[in-house]
Length: 432
Image 1 (cartoon, rainbow, N blue to C red):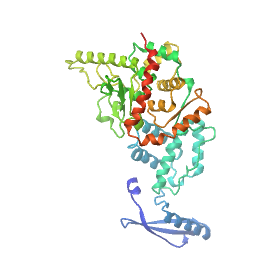
Image 2 (tube, rainbow, N blue to C red; image 1 turned 90 degrees about the vertical axis):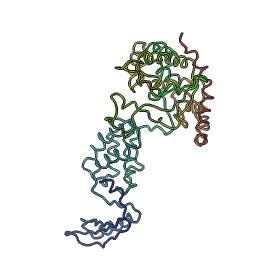
Image 3 (cartoon, one colour; image 1 turned 90 degrees about the horizontal axis):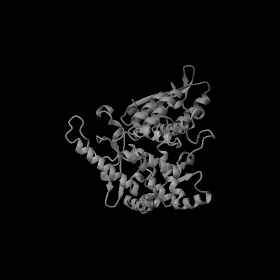
Image 4 (cartoon, one colour; image 1 turned 30 degrees about the vertical axis):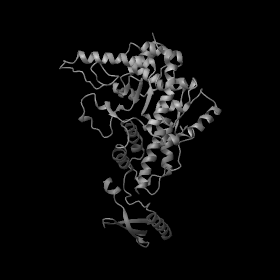
């Protein structure tokens, strides 16, 4: 249904004069489409002829500006479901799709149930923003993003005459995070001594390399799981982050072997995430040691017909060569925190810990951002620097436009130059 509606554009129209229709005033509009099909639409129910004429003039203006709603009987819930599955799903990552689906199924479809899409107005937008904000502010932020995107699409395709979300914001008690800023809550990061404890205690666990990659090099979970030995330059001690594991958009779970659907090789989060870094000594030694275990497991199972070794080259893998799942680290990580009286933080907070430690040691904000895979992000923490420092880093941030037009290798060289000092910084984390 929607494919036909979206691809149908009127090329001409006729607006008839106001007349009496069933005891009241109204008028009819004839639309002529590019395939020569015609449609008659009726606007009626006006008690006064003057009101009918006002509406007629409004419709003529909309027709001229191509903002006239051709199909006014579309249900909002049907539109949101179609937009999610057919417009957004092919464009966004699996995790983003699941977040969007939660918003559509649990909020938009419920709030706008049985409502016509073209009837959604500013008051409806304000009401849903207010109700969801009272429940969960973080959900309200995502809801606003989803709703604005969906209704903007509807406006562009003449499913609604204007976007009711325009210039409408969440209640004032919701703080927006500015685009291009990574706000780090330093109450949820580890200090230097706690990092040393975590590294030491994790050495004999299956997530030792996960810990090192996250807290020393600032890698994301799925970037860690996607690393291969072929990404490591063992001569020059450099590593190339060029993929992550996850779910490809529009992939069908039925087409995958058990426990492989969420471990597909997918592109990195952004182009800036593709980067080359020097490897600090402690991390390099751990990679070499893990490679030795990898070879031992491969030789040991070379003739195992029942459980053969899966030689996929992943650094972080099982003894059978299978890549790790997104949540593999969780039980080991939480156990390490609990047993060593460390703060109960998320694994992702190790990435923030890495950034905070480097910033506190005087590393340049732009360089740290590049290391983390954000080419144009300003990182802020609540203890790192004052407003004067922020101004200094903002002036440097103006160069982001220059960086974007440089070849990717040039950006990586900048990261490499920065990372040369990283090895020296983290050498004292080497555990005997």
